Length: 500
Image 1 (cartoon, helix red, strand yellow):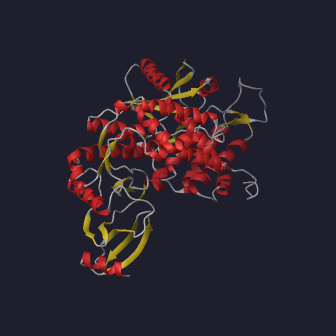
Image 2: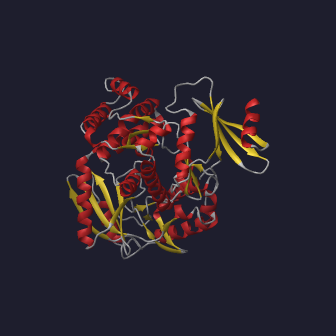
Image 3: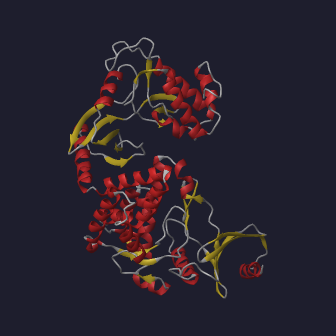
């Protein structure tokens, strides 16, 4: 425990808690509490390293000191001591949870706020630590416009591997060609170089700190945003936009996206080879990159937003919404109104729009303002049902209230008069079912019900269709054990665990 007493000496305080928090490839990390209640993290160089780090702990601490003194909008470690023998430094403990652990509990507004904060952070560190300051801190000046040799080695190996699907290989080769052709668009500045959701801490739904500057360098911004694109493909553009607004730099979209795909391609392929859920994730990642790299699609998207604005008669801000696997949804909003633009590739909205038209005088549902097709992209513009969905409210309301509200709105839907139902054969024994009775599809304003959304699967059917979906959604969002309570509240006769 010699290291404990060395740290105690450096802090000048008696230690009450001393735990080895983690063993990294190059460093050990200790969690320390002192008798006055202060908390610290101490990083110590390992005697035997798995690889040579980009920066020594002395350089990393110098970077952290420089950024802390700059007074950034996002907190960074406050270094308390640095020593060369042994090589280590300590900083005040940053309260918060890893971003990857809390992201699923954040609503859309909170996620966008975090992304905007990240963009601002990356702009600020580039402004506060110039190239000259980077040299003074001892960080590497990396003026390369290409990939790390290991990434190229993996790329060369995988594009000729017969076990990699052809569509994977064709896409990554297309990405490589685009990336190589945009080298003149590279933007350089001081970068964290390891910005991902395990180095970003969240407390009270905002960023409480960004840590671990061991890989920091003066390098290309495409590297900086790579993990954001890979981990949050529906949100990275908020980070980019906030960065561009603050820094004044213009980043080349295609270069960012292709860099992310090529850098992470080995992970996608390895997930594909694992099979099961990992394989599905890999296939979804490739489909997402197809859309992100499809320059024509991005151009059509711009035209579709302009089409929507022409129908509404005013300009709007378009933001990508969290949505399911089928298609994309953009929220069009200004200070007064909100609309939604739903998109599908090689499909249409005829089924959903027809059902919305039939339902509009019977139930509170979105109004269809228009449908169109541009270069294979089908679009439907609808009005918004204002309020919060039950998934969001499940984080605010007690479970009993969520169950009661869900049972009430499903009863209302199921009791709808289906006289004149035009879409398939009428059956007096069938009722109107939603077809997607999950918590996000029911909107409330305060305690009052506002309306139903995502109605493309509305049909005449059995009540069990919606009850099963509702139970699954309740247990996914609230935890196991709420199915029986829901069925009892709804008034369904068989509430046995076997039936659930």
